[in-house]
Length: 161
Image 1 (cartoon, helix red, strand yellow):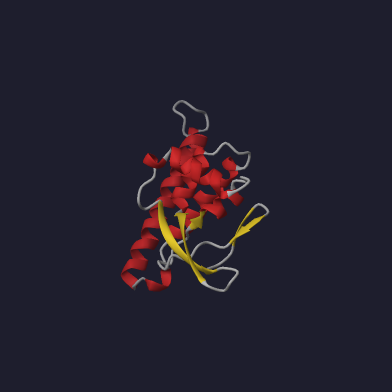
Image 2 (cartoon, rainbow, N blue to C red):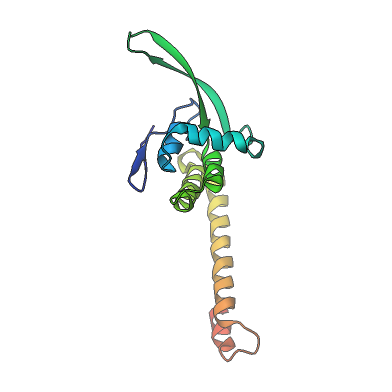
């Protein structure tokens, strides 16, 4: 999985086999600038009723110990939504900017893969995007020029033609 960078922290998301981005407790500790992952686990445990099954889960991680024998450890992982909730609950200096970064990441992750869409779906997506843009331009124009009784109302009327 591709390495992600937030400020001066680079993390490789956990590969859960579903193609989605997951962060381990250790990743979250680094991103939130906690001393160790125990702080993240405590934060989660104090607020676990706020997390859904889609936001976090416990997985078994296989690794080798110093004697080169297989070792099985359990680790908690968080989806970007779960990580965002941790950022809401955390009181570190970087939590605010981490939340913004995670929202951008969530937005990128939820964008449709255009290469998998057929022509009809692409057309619908393009028309929907054009409608959204026209709506936003209309809102901007109304806010900027369209106050009732404004001397600039005529400029707005010119924009609408």
